[in-house]
Image (cartoon, rainbow, N blue to C red; front, side, top):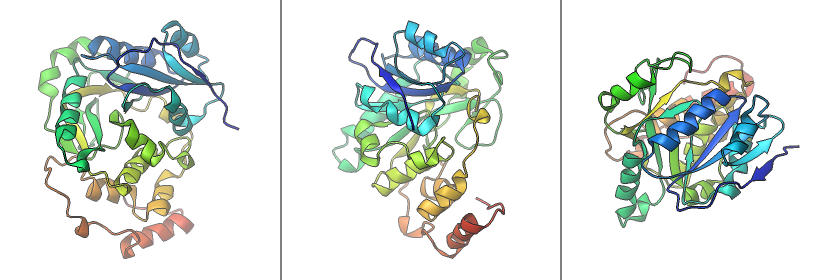
Amino acid sequence: MIRFDKYKRAEKKDYCFTFIIPTWNNLKYLELCVNSIRKNSAYEHQIIIAVNEGVDGTLQWVENQSLDYIYAKENIGICYALNACRSLIDTKFVFYANDDMYFLPNWDVPILERINQLTDNQNDTHKYFMISSTLVEPAGNNPCVVHKDFGADIESFREADLLKEKDNLCRSDWRGSTWPPNVMPLDCWDLVGGMSVEFHPGWYSDPDISRKLWHAGVRDFIGVGNSLVYHFGSKSTKRMHKNPGKKMFQLKWGVSPGAFTRHYLRRGDADFTEVEEDKLPKPNNIKQLIKRIFACFGNKKINY
């Protein structure tokens, strides 16, 4: 049985976004994350923490900070935790972030500008969207990410150097928003039912919610190149047991997560011309059907 309690502690204000941040005994990173939001945001935002266990002092710290939060004595994972935050949200926009992220100064200004560009358009096609900040990470090959090493952990974090180089880290906007940090209208979140709990504890729940949005007609999955967030990388997820998320996605949607993010979302592409949907890989075509069969019966690696 999934059990948790909810606590509404912060004074209700005219917030811009509502952050939902899951955390699992990761206090030093959570402190850095929350403090960066508070000191580096141009606007004031509601912050809701989903506390899993919290035995490292997280629960006491969150209470002392007068933050809204949900609390589970056991680790209920990302999907259940984020969905549990829903009734505490006070704004029209839900912003999902991880606790091992550091938000750079004025990260929220270009995000709000992009939202206003979409919603000022009278075309209802742009009513729903998913918009991401751009991550800066120490290493990797993700085409959506700026790769520059300012520390792989909190002990080696060079905050002053990061802030000095901020303007040199900006890039062009890109397609394929799917991973946090991202924001969407609360109506959009409700339309698709939030996170899919069958992906508990959370692996591949990110491309799944993007696929649900696509299925509902959303086509604006945008990364904002001058909204920057430093990411230490998987400081909680590395400790979690993995679900067979790739196989689950393949079986649920008939395409692999790689095919979806690469062809449907055009992950990392700076070309914003309209996707030719008739040329997209079709669910359960021969290639995808073979992958689906392997997902059902095989333990062999599927190339995504």
